[in-house]
Image (cartoon, rainbow, N blue to C red; front, top):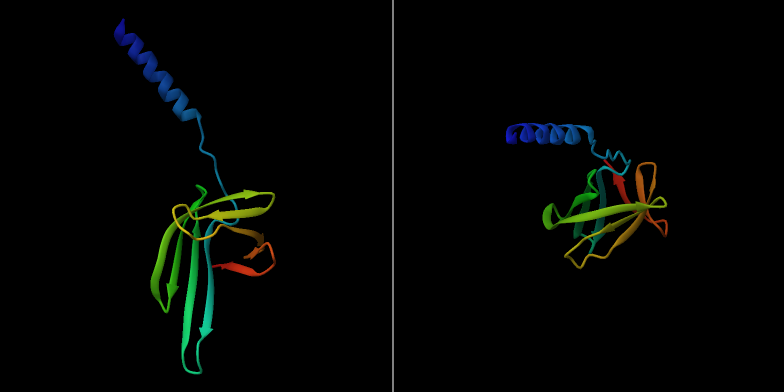
Length: 119
C-alpha cells in the first residue's frame, strides 16, 4: 500500500511540475546598454569613462564602469518597469537609483538626457 501511495504522489509531482510554465520576460530593455563619456582635463589629457548595463529577463543585471579601459566598478543591479518608467537600483552600494524611459534604442533619464544606448 505504501508503494502505491508513493507512486501516486510521484505522479502528482510530475504532473504539477510539468504543467507550470515559467514567466517569459521579453521586455525590449533586455540586453547590453552602454554610455561613453570623454573628459578633457587639459589640452593633452583626456580620460574616457564607459558605463555598461547588462539587463536580463529575471529583472536583474550586471553593471560595469571602466575608466581608460580599466574596470573600476562591477556590481549587480535590479530593475522594474512601472508605467513605462524603468527603475534601476543597485542594492548594497551607494550608487543612486536611476529612473529611465525607453525611446526606441535609447534609455533616457526622466529629464530627457541620454542615459545609455543599446548595443
